[in-house]
Structure formats: C-alpha cells, structure tokens
Length: 414
Image 1 (cartoon, rainbow, N blue to C red):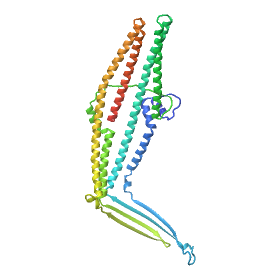
Image 2: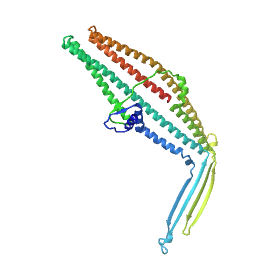
Image 3: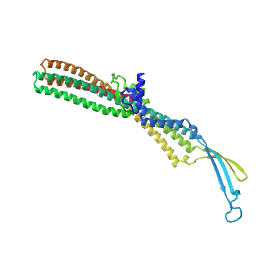
Image 4: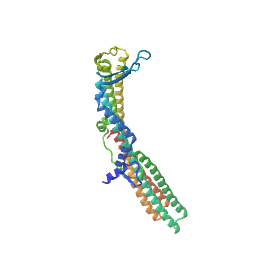
C-alpha cells in the first residue's frame, strides 16, 4: 500500500509542500506520465494505428454529389420577364472505382509505417527510462558522497573540540589548535558545496520528471560482477536492438516501395464509374456508366524516365542493406567494448574497496597514536583526508560501473 501511495503522489505535476519519497520505479513512472516528447510520440503512434486498422480506405471509391439551381428570363423583350417559369434545377451523383496492381503494396506500406512508429515509441520509452535511471543513480551517489563528507566533517569537528580543550589546558600550542579549526572549516565548506550541487541537480531531475515539491530519493547503488560472454550476448540480443530493427524495416519498406512503383507504373489500371443526374421543370433523369483500362507503355521502354526511376529504387534497396550491415558491425563492436570495460572495471572496484579498508584502518591507528601523543595532528588530518578520498573514489567507481552496466543494457535493449 505504501508503494502505491507514493506512486500516486509522484504523478502530481505540482506537488504540495509535503515531503514525497521517490524510488527509481516511482521516478520512471512519473517521467513516463509527464514527458511531453513521449506524449507527442504517442499521438503519432495513435495516428499510424488508425490508418493501419483501416486499410480498406486505400480502395474506397470516389463519391460525389452535386446540385444546381438556375434562373433564366428575357431582359428587354417579351412579357413576364420575371416569371417563375424561369427557374430550373439539376441534381447529380457519381461513384468511381479505380484499381491498380500497386494498391496491395501501398497497404503493406501503411502497415509497416505503423510497426515503425510502434518501434519508435517503445524506443523513446526505453531512452527515457535509461535517462531517468542514470540521473537517479547519479543523485544517489551524490547523496552518499554527502554522507561521506558529513562523516569527515563530524570527525574534523570532534577533533576541533578536542584541540580547543587541549589548547585551553595548555597541552598543545596555538598553531596546532588553528590547524584543527582550519581542517574543520575546510570539511564544512566541502560539505556545503556538495549539498548545494546536489540541490541544483535534484531540481534538474525533477524537471525531467515533471514534478515539483520537496522530494527525497530512496535507493542505493548495488552492483554485481559482470561475467557474461559478449559473443553470446550478441547472438541473443543483437536482432532486438531498435536501430537494427529500424534498419531492417527500412530495407523492407524500400522493397515494398519498389514493388509498389513497379506494379503501379507497368501494370494496367482499371476504372469503373457510374453517374446519375436529374433536371428539368418536368423532372427527367439519366444514368450512365463506364469502364476503362489504362495500359502504360513508357515504363517498358529501356532508358525512359519511368524506367530509370524504377532502376533507382533497386539501388536504394542495396544502399539500405549496406547501412544495415554497417549498423550491425557497429552494434557488435559497442557490445564487445562495453563488456570488456565492465570486466576490467571490476578490478578497479576491488582495488578501491581494498583502499577503503586500508585507509580506515590507518585512520584508526593514527587516531590512537595521536591520543597517546605519538602522532602529530597533521598526520591525523592526512589519514582522515585519505580515508575520505578512498571512500569517495570507491563511490565514484561504483557509480561509474552502474552507469556502464546501464549502457550495456541499452546496447542489448534488455
């Protein structure tokens, strides 16, 4: 129930002053709901779907209705120039059917246009989801970095308090006391800068979501070691990538277009029409009909403009196939590169974790030595700063690893 409660309030475009907790799922749902670009893409999809569901419109006959009212009389001669007998009228209606062998391929193009728009809409949703996820985890990393800086500030302030008391008791000189104060102020300044940057980035993130108000992000960066085989990933996911599917659809569209042009240009066209009209003071009507056939000649003659246009269509298909091959090669290289980077990056993560453990232990030993009077304050500050840097580097590495993993998921479209 709590999850749905939070989701409900996350959809509000202008939130109240009440604090709202956002998980990654809630953030993605809000972005999907409020994205203007996604809504526009949805309207395009709806229009394409409407046409694809009404393919019969391509063969719907041409229907016309007409009417006419007239008046005629003598102007300078004769009598009763403005007699009612001068009025006349006529009405008419007509239906015309036309059929060409290219119409079935035109219908296929309409259906393919809907599939293309459907792919575009799905890809837009995934791109938005990836953008939100990356921003979300980046902000989570900033929050955790603020926690690290808060710990560093707390330690610096604790040392500042100890040094002030020791200075009052005459145990340390003024220089050591000032160094302790400077270290505490430096830690507070670093924390303030981080909090300011986080607030600005959070507002930018909320603009993407279409949400305003006081928001708290809830989540953490969880990473696992990547050990999948790149070649197996290529076999499993390459054909599902939106860019690859789009290139294949482009080839198919050009093939259908070429056939549509060929049959429309070379095949005979058939037409049938019927017309009815009625007119006169004493009503009379007439019904007429006709059947026609149009046999093209020019496209069959080598070298004519119509023939050249058909040859160009075949060349466009071949170029689209080359574009598809190039896209597949680029996608394979991207997947291999991301997989290799993830494997090598994990070693960086392990080294960063080891550095954190060493830095924390070093600080503990140094602090104990400082309390015993065997270590100077500068050494303690160096140990504390080294521990903070090691924690920040680990956080940065884990955040980068998470972003790299999201890039791989995008490349695999999974």
